[in-house]
Length: 392
Image 1 (cartoon, rainbow, N blue to C red):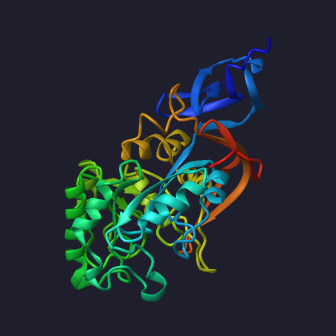
Image 2 (image 1 turned 30 degrees about the vertical axis):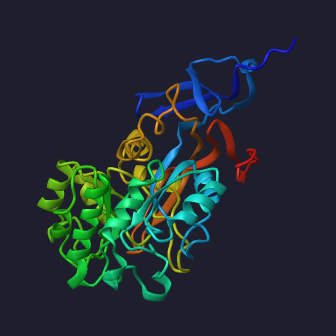
């Protein structure tokens, strides 16, 4: 009589870096029925249906990208989620306002279910999200695009899918004379839906302190480390008082790199003044030809090169965004019973260089290259290719 294996998948020999558990040691990790089943110094490979030797490699919880654009096919800037996320060790992606209350249902019912990556959403305060950006340059040139009640109702009707509301404070997205009204509307949506508010602050047409006044604990200031006018530093490169006060009251300072929205020098000044990013995210999208965007594994590597410890950079990409989303009991850690989402990286040593669109470069000696990504207890990416994971 054949005995069924105890586990579906086993990773052996790697170093587990799991900030939520305070682990940075050699561990074997077993998965069963989509969840983490056991974490131990040694687990017999014979107990698993599939075993992968990852000796010498780094294992982390699956990365969480708090700001990307994953409405693939819904607008031209959105990327293919599995190709981008699973290839970078990212198992959860949050779409930051690609759709609004008018057009989110296709994203929820057709686009997101077609992918293996766990995909969540923030609805744009504009009813059609980013659908009109290519023609108009932004979503709020006509303030009639905002309906507070219908947006908040859509968020409340979609727990587990909608995790907040997004508004873009950018000179090309909303006129200066309408910006405060747009912020008030977004705040009203968040309050009515009892959810979080994410605000794009790079290139804001109104003073940054005005924007920060609208943000409550748990709200997200995204593109926080941009180098455009009205950034987090004053003219003496000191962190502005209002920014420090916002961080102290629990406002999330999110990277949302995007190539154009994160300045190396701003980050370095902030790190020197003990103001690190709360969360590391990509703002991944299909960029114009002259723009360099990075996936999550490269951004973890870049921020480590800029001075964050590797555990802190991993925490900002796993356990912390899980807490921001209120999902810390499901994702962001590889404790037994958590979702079986993991990333395995080769720690490449060499001379690496990362760019920003301000012309600055950051050099580093270590880069995390994705070797394998586990999503819901199955291998979804391995050594440069998506793998078959069964039916969606």
